[in-house]
Image 1 (spheres, rainbow, N blue to C red):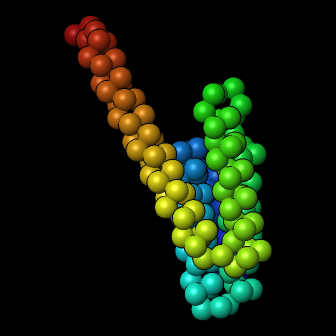
Image 2: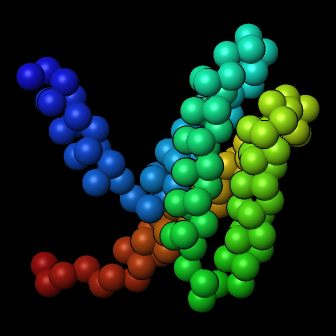
Length: 141
């Protein structure tokens, strides 16, 4: 019963997230799974490493599938996600920790770029709202 309540809470939390919050959550999960994969490779727990790599690939595929192609940046992100997927396949096939160690900072930096962009957009929206509020004439008094 408790598990069901927790699951419902998680689903409700995800359903009420903004697109930027969801994007950052996906990147957090991706980074976490890449870390888990690396730790498992270090400990020669190859099944755990493969499972973490597979979850990472699922997230990358989802991110790629949900890109809006009307924006020029989407083409570049498609290429980057293809590269991430290729590198993760190399990690899985060759149990290649070096490739994973090269990939992880790229994913983390991209996540940080999205975080900064989201923060800048939020600040700009707040400034625009404040400016609009100053232009509204006072009501009859």
